[in-house]
Image (cartoon, rainbow, N blue to C red; front, top):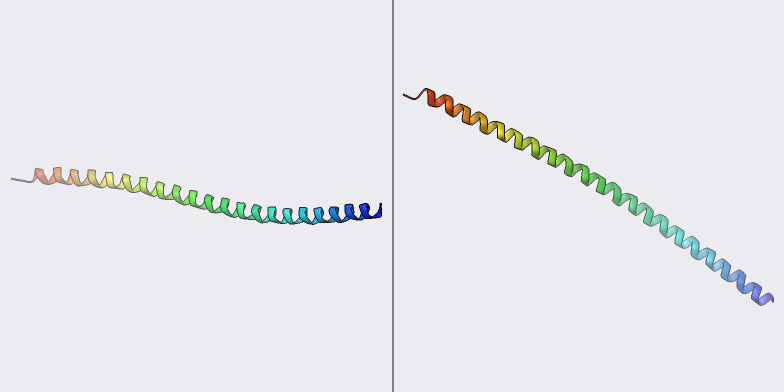
Length: 80
């Protein structure tokens, strides 16, 4: 009976140690997951700013093209 009791205690201790190791690894994975999520959020924010800048540049380009065309029309009025 004592042998069986000792085996159960030893197995319980080993299981507790195994569970602790698993929890430690879960914490490491959780930290890595948070770090990856933060990085992805930063990349998403950067991509959004790039898209906004591209849209602004496109609008400026359209306005410049319009201004150049208007200057051409004004110059044509002065031709003899």
